[in-house]
Image (tube, rainbow, N blue to C red; front, side, top):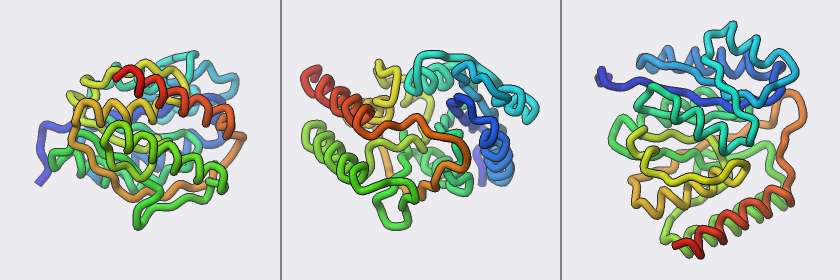
Length: 230
């Protein structure tokens, strides 16, 4: 039976995603309607030059602006959220809306954090070349070793939080290091976390902002900073 206390906030950072954002929001709304909790959708936009904001507004999303980067956008959106269950989702149609229920259920039964993983049974990716797989495994190994964690995936943003647990995290990363920093902080704060299988689809339209070596350096720097900050 659904608890009456829950309210879901779905946070989606965007930047020039007019060809994707409509389907992302429509798919999310259809799944959230099935779940049955009240919800809001927050789009944190990096001052898009296209119709991203216009489409998101038309579909009922709340709009916040942030020009710094993905990390800054996620934190700003989550701090502005009304919900006690916070979910981050990408705007490029790579995350399957059908997995939202898993992310909600995990918080519903008492976990502080639920992390989508592409590397456990039932998960996978259409959009991960070998060099990125190897890099991800290396970063997972480092974080697990130095922070006594048991992650299988590191650089993936489809995840949910209990808001009280999220507020315990000390997050400083403004860009693509945010998911790695979140994982480290989750381990440092000894939050109750679970991974669930997630399948990453290819970006539907447009060109992504991910640059393998540039962003790999950012992630490595994030890990090293936190090792020496312990």
